[in-house]
Length: 278
Ligand code: AMP
Image 1 (tube, rainbow, N blue to C red):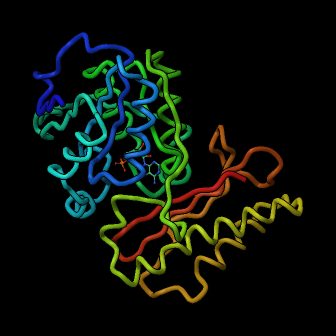
Image 2: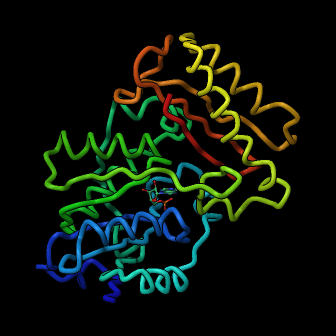
């Protein structure tokens, strides 16, 4: 396995297809699923690349960046074990010049959901993903539907800038109690961790309203909100709970076509997100 610590070390002409899994590390079963799928797409002859980079541009709160878990040694061992060909794990100072001054912004899909409460987040995501695509020149890249808005924005980035990369979206991998796997789960206390599956339960209960033909968004939102807050610990806060169109991500007053119910919660400083297709 090739271990690249800087842009200068990236070789050209890797065997194609070159399939990239961008991550921020602290790899868990969700990342493993993406890497396994990358291997399937690359085949034996192609190349699987994993990038591990805690991207400072996409953190709107310095404390969140500071607290983000890091585990490079065990991440490298996981990549090795999964047959990854190349891992790219640059230092932030290598990847972005101290005076870098160009960014990529998206002005429509990034307005609701996470974009509304995390100013600059998706600009940071788009900028780092475009740069990763430029330096690693993948033919394919994989992203998880857990970060549904991110996936939609990356597809838009590729479409609008005509990037020669095929984007693949993968289903969310969950713990047995329904909690979506996330590197941030490591920062939950035992009590918060035990409570956290309420997020999935609330979204499932709201989704089930569709079976009876419910169309009013406010009924979905109220059902989910009640379950998110019922007997909730004091340190739980709803960051957002929104029902949007699955393609445009714009808020829906009525559910008639393909909708997405998405939420973010805080347990103290730890932020968890999840979503469900309705
Ligand atoms: P992150 O390291 O959190 O930036 O995530 C890297 C990639 O893994 C992103 O495309 C995420 O959407 C994806 N991912 C994170 N958690 C999960 C999960 N539980 N299931 C599937 N994909 C995930």
